[in-house]
Length: 442
Image (cartoon, rainbow, N blue to C red):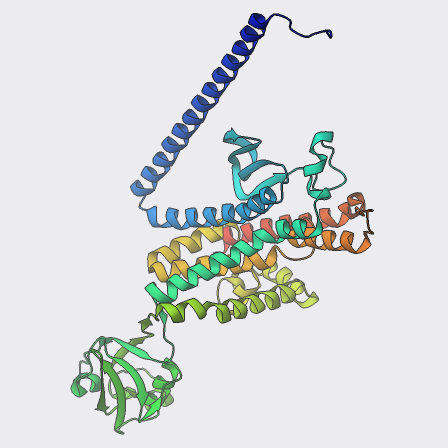
């Protein structure tokens, strides 16, 4: 009999029963702690929701929560692919800094930290600089195959494009978007001197104008230009009303006969006395499933172009000028050189929420595309940097001899990128606090 063996079966049963009892107590304590954590989280959510209702910002809070969900779905992409690849994931958190609340399930700790400026998933062995337990080496990110490391690195941005696609399907099929090829009558004016030509012709609020003298509109500006160019001339408008197409003849009057203090050129332009907007239209579900691809591609290429422009010598010069003359950046072309801080994003969320669901979905779509593209920039610590390192290691590796890049040599570049991100964040916050952007939704 070897040293340490138990010869008495009764003693063995007693020790085994004691061990099982301790495990049951530990499990009960873990479950109790989990329920207490969930209860505290529920109370916190209820308190925040109650405060939002009291302050009349519940819609804004919902949009901000949607952005938080987007952040965590990004991290969920990394988390799920890492788990699928049998990598060890030790943390899944919203925010950075001091820990506010967390619970552990299995080998992973889930929770919230004090600074809600993003989220992260901690996977063991992300680089050769990280020291980990010998038993975890087989499940380290750095020892996984190239396809699995690539999948983990790309998954976060991929989830943003998935969310962008879903948002567009909802927007196209159920909410609707503005149809720029038509003009909807919001209201018909009442002139003090005479009845407005639109009222005389029988144009009503809700009518949708789609053509002028048999020619389809390109946009609302086309209609306005044609009306202004036709004072005292009969114009035939193609109009959709209650599902039927009709033709309405209207004669614009010179603006000078209705309004005073106009320039001679403006006084000669024709008007009919209507307020116009682009009508909102939905598309069939099948069309909505295919339509987002071209839109996503267009926004993606535009975002890539904008990022390239921002970080070009000209773009950097323009940004420095914007910081020196911030009043010029609140609207128009000047606003295009700016980045948005969390304060600016919350303000945009409030403005979008005040307009309606369409504006909110448009905002969430644009955020998803930007974050998805920006994260794939091939520089550490961004996801694209991990893709670049994994690809470089794959090229340098030989059969049965994997190559691992020396991350210490890349640290200066990583710190430089972090410094640029922090600088952009601080300056964006300064601009958002001192010179807020004009409302793009109203």
